[in-house]
Length: 119
Image (cartoon, rainbow, N blue to C red; front, side):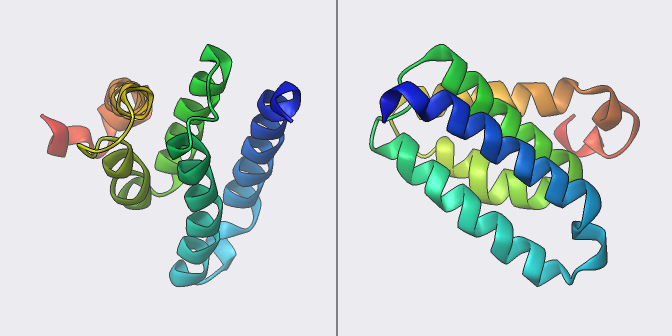
């Protein structure tokens, strides 16, 4: 139901953030990647179908990328942002990917640790 998409995205974002903050450090890396892949593949499919039509939904997808990057930058870059920036992606997906990349690069935590690769 398109009336509940924003709420569903918000709830899913909260679950992913909780998982990354509480459980991810205690699990094997490949298990965390599998979990993140299962969530993000659904989000990318949702976006490819053109179902994210509102700005608030785009904002939430940017937040998803940033939340995952704070815990696992490699996964966020390779499995979300680069997928969003593919040439055959919808324009909305490209904008979301660019916004997420900009937010990650400009975040205070990355300016202090590990964003040298972007410079």
